[in-house]
Length: 231
Image (cartoon, rainbow, N blue to C red; front, side):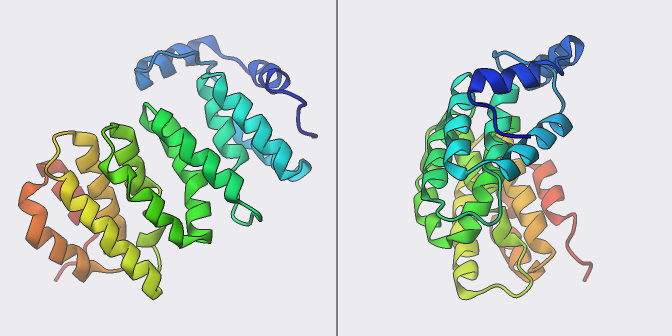
């Protein structure tokens, strides 16, 4: 399937799968006022996969920009999916676009898809962490949340390189600051980051919890400890 010529063409294809009942459920779940079509992620995955395979990067970037601008839930999700790809060169334009989207995220669902796309670009060029450090100090909640979500790959290396170890320490520094902030979603994000890191470096997570754990909300602390090996 070739890439649609415009965002309106792409939306026409997506709207053919519209489900009004599901759209109402999504509006209630996400609690953000925008248009919902009720189209499943499985359908969006299929469209994005086909269009990624069939289209040059420049065309996908242009379509992703236009889809995002519609502010329709599924269109924004699809925009992120169009740019979620492990190998991509050059990728500076994609990274820049993702960075412009992050401050516009206003809920976990779209932010999560944007961060999944961004994770691929961060893994490709870890030096981009320097740009993300500003997100951790943002006044915008979901930008701070994204700083942890997009850096999740740094928790996963079994044999981390020096640059990955440095990245872990920087992110853990942000996490310690988040614990003084009241939003439960940030404490949950810290907990998820620690839980994933504990599968690779349990000692570092124990050290973090020993120093900062008393400032974590109870449920978050329990989640952070969930995958720690018993000693």
